[in-house]
Image (cartoon, rainbow, N blue to C red; front, side, top):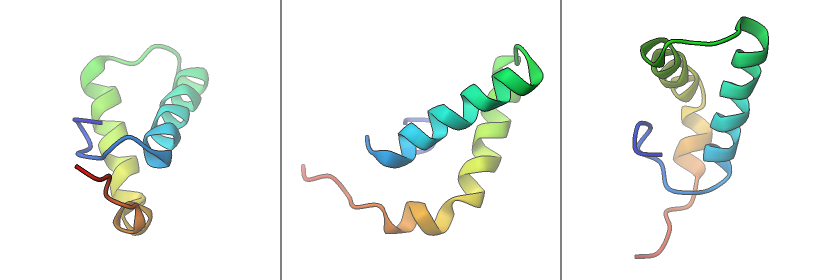
Length: 57
């Protein structure tokens, strides 16, 4: 969540599933590679991220 700057919610679940799929397809990923791939995925999800509700404080 911190890496992507997102609150808890459906997008975090989608990010976890994306990383799990990458792990199954490619095998173990170096932390830096996983972070770069996750950031690239998040950029492709920006319309969804913008529509995500902000949690109350």
